[in-house]
Amino acid sequence: MSTSIDKLATNVPQFTTARQFADVEADVRNAIERVLASNWFVLGGELDAFEQAFADYCGVGACVGVANGTDAIELALRACGVGPGDEVIVPAFTANFTALAVSAAGATPVLVDVCTDTATLDPSGIEPAVTSATKAIVPVHLYGQPASMGPICDIAQRHGLKVIEDAAQAHGARYQGRKVGSIGDVGAFSFYPTKNLGAYGDGGAVTTNDPELAARVRVLRHGGIAEGYMSVVKGRNSRLDEMQAAILSAKLPHLDAWSERRRAIAHSYSEAVGAAAGLLTPLQQAGSDHVYHLYVVCSERRDGLAAHLQAREIGTKVHYPHALHELEAYPEWHALSGQFPNAERLARTVLSLPMFPELTAEEVAAVCAGVRGFPRDG
Ligand SMILES: *Cc1c(COP(=O)(O)O)cnc(C)c1O
Image 1: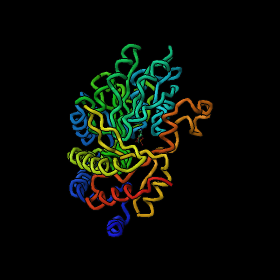
Image 2: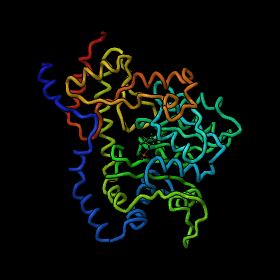
Image 3: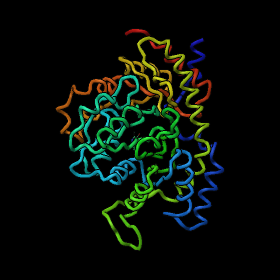
Image 4: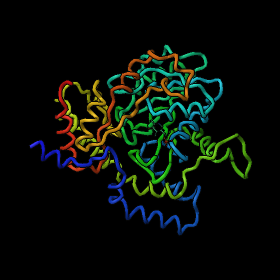
C-alpha cells in the first residue's frame, strides 16, 4: 500500500507558479496585449482599475499600487508621519522585509515576541515595549493567519499609535468578519509571484479608509510630486506598472476560489497530521478565516521530517530559519538572544508543507501519508 502511495508522491513541489498559469492564461495574455496596444506603461488606466477592484475586494475606501510589499509598508509608515527618531513595534518572527521597511522609513524597529500557536504578534508583549518614541505597530498576518487585531488595535488606541497591517501573506483573510488590510489604519500588501495574489514580477499595494493617507502615499510613490513636477516631499520611485496591474486584475477574480482550495488542502493536512506524533498543526482560530499562504507544522525534529519527506520527493521549506534578532543585518539585536523564546523556538521547529491551490487530490494524499509515515521517535 504505502509503496504505491509513495510512487504517486513523486515530485510534489512545496510551491510552483507553473500550474496556475493554465487557469489564467487567456485573460493574462489579453491583459498584456491590451497594455501593449495602449502604449501607456506607468500610472494609467490599468492601475486605476486594479486599485478600484482591490479596494472593493478588501472593503476599503482606497488602494494605492506601489512597487512591492516592502515599499507598501515603508510608504504607509511615512504617510502616517513615522520617521527618524520614532520606534515601531514589529514581531520578532516574520519575513525580514517587515523590519527592513521600518528601517527604510528611517524609524527603529522594536521587537516583540509572537504567540506560539498563531506565530503572530503577542498582544501581551506590546505595552511593555511602548516608550515615548513609539509611533506605530506593524502586526503581520503570518502564513495567512490574521493577527489578534482586536487587542492590538485597543492597545494602539490607548497609546495613540498607528496600526499598519503587514498583509503580504494574507490577501482575503478575515478577522471577525473583516478583511485584513481594512482593520488597522493602513494595510500593506505584496504581489510577489509566490503570494496568494501574485503578479508576474514585483508589485504591492497600500489600503486604507483614510483618503488623506491614501493621497500622501500617492505623492510619496511618485517622487514626492503632487502636481506639475513640483516635488513637495522627498518621496520614492515606487509605482505598480500597467503590465502588472493588468495581470493582477485578470487574477483577482480567481482569488476567493484559490483561497477555498487552500483551506480544503489545509483541512486534509490537519486531519492527517493531527494524528502524527509530536507535530503542531496551524491553529484554526474561531472567528478568523485563515488563507493558508503557507501550511506550517512545528516539530522538534523538523530537519528529520524534512529529510523523511524529501526521500519521498515531497518538497518542504523553512519559513523562516531565523528570528529577526538573529539576522546579521541587525547586529544591534544580537544581545537580545533569549528574550523572544517563542520566535526562537519557531525558527528551530517550523516546516512548510506543499501548499498551492493546484495541488491534486493524489498529491495531498501523498503528503498526508508521508507525514503519517514519519517515525514517532528517532
Ligand atoms: C513578502 C513579504 C513582504 C515583502 O513583500 P515584497 O513584495 O517582497 O517586498 C513583507 N512582509 C511579509 C510578511 C512578506 O511575506
